[in-house]
Image (cartoon, rainbow, N blue to C red; front, side, top):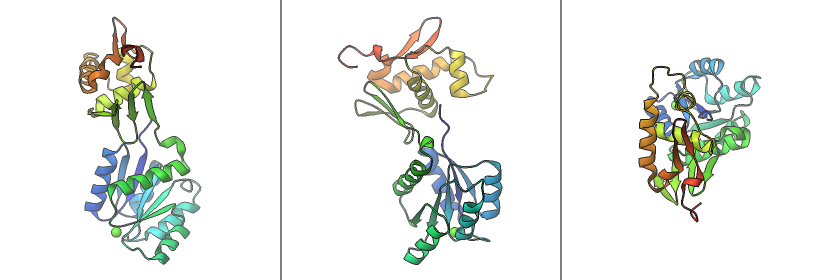
Length: 235
Ligand code: CA
């Protein structure tokens, strides 16, 4: 299971920062908010994000100053920077790009535009961080948008069911014991009973509708996602 791409959101206006973070979270990213350069620097020293969304106008050092510095430092120079600004002057845009930003978005921007630009810089600079979509038969899972389609119909999955399906699809045709699934999907939560897996498998099947037959119970062993479950001619 791939890690969600981390996005450091450097933005001093709490309402905007929170709105961006919520949208990122809903679209398969792991955002962290920093209200200024000092907090952002602390975050960068701690964990390197996959992309930085950097507001131009910040208290203390400006976005352009920060971009320039992060580009020069060995540790941060490879991290894509997307500049956010309320100003749309051509001169500002050039200044931002000169400072080392990879791209530039003018406020107000739509969520779709922001997501598209983030994915574009990630693809350009770090192709491995953009989760590919997985297809098995007519079942499609897009890890970046968190969508699951079966024959072009969207299946509405909860977050745990999504993670479970993602794991099963990327490790298809193999039998996975409940303990293994707990480990891989839930992480180190030793207090979760194996029965929990059965509950989420049941929910996953309900959400998958016709594709539910692809999630096979292997008695005494665990679960397997298999294309064999679909009737012949539908594979
Ligand atoms: Ca600002």
